[in-house]
Image 1: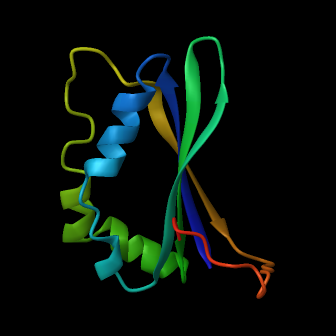
Image 2: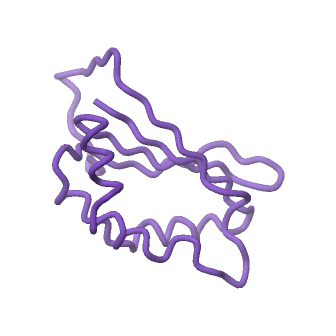
Image 3: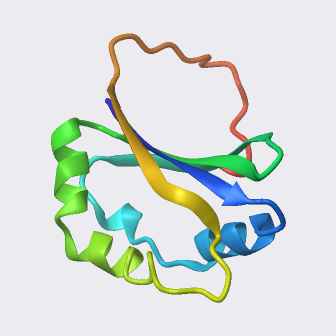
Length: 115
C-alpha cells in the first residue's frame, strides 16, 4: 500500500472554511483504480495556525501516480491555489508519501459510519 499525505497549516479562524472546501469538492477518487480510503485529519492548534493533513491510501504508488496524472485529479484540484480575499493556510502544502512496510488490522472491530 501507499499512503499520500499533504500537510496544511491553516490560518487560525479559517478552519471552518478550509473544512467546507474539502467537504464540498467532488473528488471522483472512487473512480480510480487502487483507491482505498481518504481522511482529512485535524491536528494540533498552534498560536497562528491549526495543522491539517489529507491522508489517502492507495493499493500501490503506481495507482497514486496515475491519480495525480488523471482528469479526476485535475477536476478535484481545479480551484486549488485560487486567489482568496484572505489566505486559508500558511505557505504551501507539504507532501509526504509512504510505502507500507507493515500493516495490521483488527478483524473484530466494527466499521464506523465515516469509513
